[in-house]
Image (cartoon, rainbow, N blue to C red):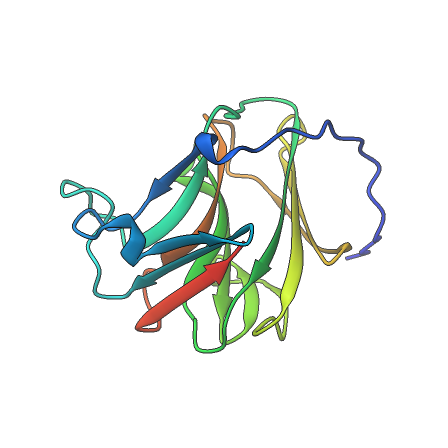
Length: 187
């Protein structure tokens, strides 16, 4: 795969206020026990034994930010954020595009032992523990393509999972198997 580090898109910068963040956390825990915002850094953490975000849900434990007001079903959209994952956090989705015609998500970026993977499959980036790294995900809905950049370098291109009501999420979401007891990411 030819990984050109340049991007041929221009994007409109959208203002992200904390008021458009929908924080999802284990339903039986107070927010302060799974989330903090200090010095413009959001810290999100969860334990493998935590409850889902609502009592009727069968999802795995997670503390995530869902970005409200920017759902999409067409066009070219970009997620950009600076992430930090401490050593020991493993088996966790740190960013996802929720919604698809096939399954619940069209993309999950997971950390396993300091390495980023597409779900549990393709290796995207290595050695990401204990340092800040920039994540850019470009979703071209019309072409059905998702491109992942880490620190400005194109690392991965994949077909999406079909159209849907799509939106971005980031934080920590325990993977189906192989999750560490404690999982954390900072954004």
